[in-house]
Each structure stands twice: as C-alpha cells, then as structure tokens.
Amino acid sequence: LAASLMMMHALPMDAAAANDKGAFVKVDRTHFVRGGQRYYIAGANFWYGAYLGAAGKVGDRARLVKELDTLKAAGINNVRVLAVSEKTDMPSAVRPATTAAPGQYDEDLLAGLDYLLAELAKRDMTAVIYLNNFWQWSGGMTQYLNWFEGTKALDPNITKDYEDYMAKTVRFYRNDQAQAEYRNVIRKIVQRVNTVTGKRYADDPAVMAWQLANEPRPGNARTTPEEKAVYVKWIADTAGYIHGLDANHLVSSGSEGLAGSAQDGELFMQAHRSKHIDYLTYHLWPKNWGWIDSKTVAATWDGALEKSRHYLNVHIDYAKKVGKPIVLEEFGMDRDNASFDIKAGTTVRDRFYGAVFDVITTRATKGEPIAGFNFWAWGGAGRAANPDYWWKEGNDLMGDPPQEEQGLYSVFDTDASTIALIRATAAKLKGLERK
Ligand SMILES: O=C1NC[C@H](CO)[C@@H](O)[C@@H]1O
Image (tube, rainbow, N blue to C red; front, side, top):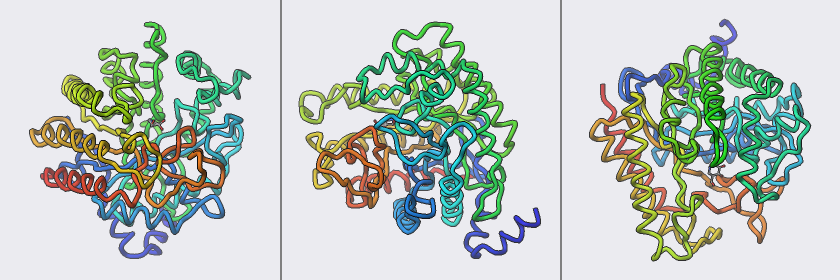
C-alpha cells in the first residue's frame, strides 16, 4: 500500500486525479453506473493496445499515446483489448506471443498492458480485457490443446474448415490441464501489480471488466446438449474464479450472442444467468455471416439491414429477460467494393454504422438495458505494409488481426466520416448519463 501511495504521488497530477476520479464501473440492475451515475461505454476494439504499450521494438508507445488521444477526442471512453497470446506455429497468429509455453511468460510484453492501463487512467478511459481467444489469431484455445493434448493447433485459414475447428476447439473446456494453465494465466494477470503505476490491477478503475475469452463458442452448428451444458458450466465456473480473485471489477463472457450460441437463444440466456456474469455481450457481423456482399450492395443491403436490426433488437430483448445490461462489443463492415485500400470509400460502412447506432441510441434513450458499444476496430495510424494486405511480423498492428487482410474492418485515423458518426453517438450516450 505504501509503494502504491508513493507511486500515486509520483504520477503526474492529472494521472493521480484521474485515478481518484475514475471509480469502478458497476452494474445497477440493467445499467452500468460509475461515480454514482449511469455510465455508457462508447468504445473501440483495440486488440493490440497492450502490444503498442510494450517497450522495445515490438511496442510503439509514441503511437499508443497518439491513438488514445485521437480516440479520446472522438468521445471514446473504453477500449477492448487482448491480454495474452500463445506462441504457435499457426501462420495467421500474431507474433511475438506473451506466452511461449505453459508457465513461460514474456514480462516485457506483459508490461505493455501496464503501460496501456496507465495511459488509459490519465484519460479517464477504461478497458475490457480478454484472457483467451476462441480463434487462432492469438494462439488461443487451440494452442492450449496443442500443449496439453499434443494435437496440431488448427489454423482455419489453412484448413478452410471452421466447423471442424469449432468442434475440436471446445475440447479446451474439458481439458483439465488446459484449464489449470488457463487459470494460472488468469491469476497472473488479474493479480498483477502494474510496473508503471505500482497499482494492483484488481484495484485499478482503468480496468472495467475481465472477459473470459474473445468469442467463446459451445461448439459448431451441430453442438450437442452435453456440449452446451459444458459451455454454460465453464462460463459460470471461470467467471466465479475471476470474481474470487478480484472483488472490484465486472466479468463478461465475450459471447457473440446467437451466432456464438449455435443460434440457441435459451443457451445464450442460460450462459449469462450466472451470478458471476455481470453483463451480456453480443457481436454483429453481416459480411462474415453472409448477409451482405459489398461487391453487390444493391442486391444485398436491404436484407442485411433487416437481419442486422433484428439481431440488435432480439439481443436487447434477451438482456431484458435476463435482467442485465448488454454491450454490443463488436460490429463492423468492410470498405466500399470490399476493398482493403485505405483510399477506398466507406459509404456502406457509414450507412451500416448509422443504422446500428440508430437502434442503440433509440432504445437506450427509452432506458432499455443498453450499456454501450465497441466498434471493430480501431486501425488509427496503422498502415498495411504489403501489396497482398496480409500481415507479417514487424508490420504495423491495426484493427484487423493477422488472420484477416489488413484494412478489412479497420477504421483508420483518416476515415473522417466514420469517426464523425462515432463521435456523435458517443455524445448522445453521454447525454443519457445522469444520477
Ligand atoms: O473477434 C473477432 N470477431 C470478428 C472479427 C472480424 O472478422 C475477427 O477479426 C475477430 O476474430
């Protein structure tokens, strides 16, 4: 405590003030509250934020500071970030990884999250921090199975078989050794003492929530009742474990909603009824789910808009039934004509963002259980390095992880029309914050 108090005095006044000012985000029935009043998150997905915070050649702290200033100026008050990555031979995973092997962690990379949290506190911004990944782009659960089953880590960019990937990856939930190492990592991160501020993560208001994983799924389209039961239990047990380590912060699943629940609404609600899960999450991906093709927008836009609005509304209704807040923590659309080129327009993207924001702000204004959004994803000053738009180690990191073309969904710092939409929506939600 003495060290922490000393470090607090060592911080610039604005940082110390921000820490004092930034109360923990809590849940009051179907809303977030912070500092005694209703709180909405206007957030960005920034999976690589801790990578930028690392010292040395992997990080880019000058860029991180610039990105956070740009996001803050756009009204963004929350970022959703990856905490850890697992070393793997899968081609489409980020390198380097924070975890070389079970129990072998790169302290320099982990200090990147320390730096990010310190910079967020200075700006009174918060972070949702996910502790694993159902997908391969950071190693994730399939890499845990490589460690503890000896099976090959499956890269769907190579196998082209997502159904097989999902059916096999869910073995993670039932592998005792994988779960033990996963909890070692959870404990290491949640109980970490920030090397920049001297503050325990568990006592830091810059953390908003711990998240079990990015997009955990119960299985594939043929998920069995037994797999669903394993998934519900894994969520409840893991969330309970995190709350046991940290009494201050919220815990969420990272679920996509129906798309990540085998299209089973009862499963989605059941997975989030646990007292250890504080709020619901859902993600909206019209292009990934085949609802729209940006090369034939005229033919597919109306259908995609109708399905998107339905997806938004049905999940807000699920939150009302469960009686907890819900955050749309991922949504995105590619650039015009499915281009990855930063010079391509964002007409379709802006129409989509506008339609999403209309549903969210309209129903939030009515007091419905909406706690905010995180768009996917902030590319900022990052720029694609290769003519084929694929990421190679050492290239800029941006909103699109390595398994996708660099420029697919990233919102860059030059995308003024999209940033203006985000800023306007952030202001609308801010206007709803009251005692
Ligand atoms: O979590 C995710 N959801 C969708 C993103 C864009 O396809 C993807 O990059 C990421 O794995």
